Image (spheres, rainbow, N blue to C red):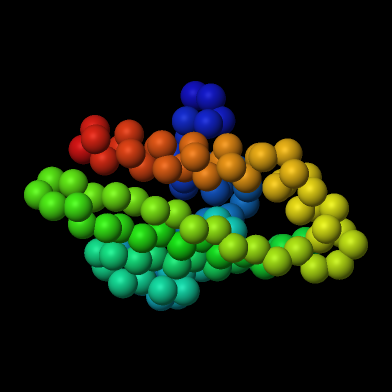
Length: 116
């Protein structure tokens, strides 16, 4: 199976991160690279994380658009402290890699919802 098609759990094990915490996600649950900061089902899920070069957040919001219709919005925030952080920001943001990953994530959610 190509790397892009592995489940989150399989990919996490390959990176030596095990998803932890209760399901459905609640405050304190963990995902690879993130912990749940806010979980207000069914409208908002806020994830936070950090590593050597960045502190970041990914916030999902669901908007009810009427019978059988929902809009998913994703908001990202990050700080990139220090010289290494600025270099990392140029690599991630400057190359549009962040945009591509975010769009792929939203597309995967859409595909899964439409399939289920």
